[in-house]
Image 1 (tube, rainbow, N blue to C red):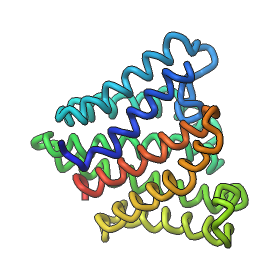
Image 2: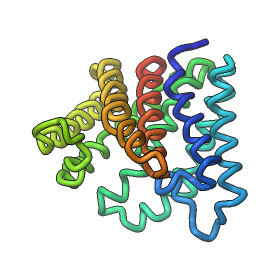
Image 3: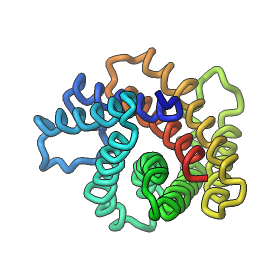
Length: 237
């Protein structure tokens, strides 16, 4: 098994399992219009996520990456961009599409390794779009600093400081990825920060409220983001 794909694959599998268990989409991250009924399409969505993750674990990394890149990319183009463009002046409107774009770029980075003459272009696309997404994360942290601080676990002091620090971390990582300066280090730091969110923030919240759909989805998204950052580090920097 290629252990570099493990967090990304497990994130997709977790999101798929959540979709089946809760009979629903991935809430605001998937942003499916209300005109589309949850059933049976939530099951279809879950099946695609499970298939992508399982293919990656079954040494079919390229096939799994292609499936997940296509599916996550569909979320951005079909569900996120239309409402985001209507509120383009609000940084908050860009955060969710930035998260899913960042997810997509992990798979794009992995695909770059087997893309022949297109490989260098795909690496550049993955690095730059991941970087732009991270910049959005940073500005969103700054713009909603009190909201961000409210997510810092109760046992960690100086919550506002950590909200500013993580925002700065996203911003600096994003600038490094876009510029190509220390981009490998930046992607690794971004992966570590995302993984810390999953382990220190979202996993305890799931344990405390196991029946809450949104807590599970946030854990799945955070795990997937950490995995995506690691794939960008490994294959696009």
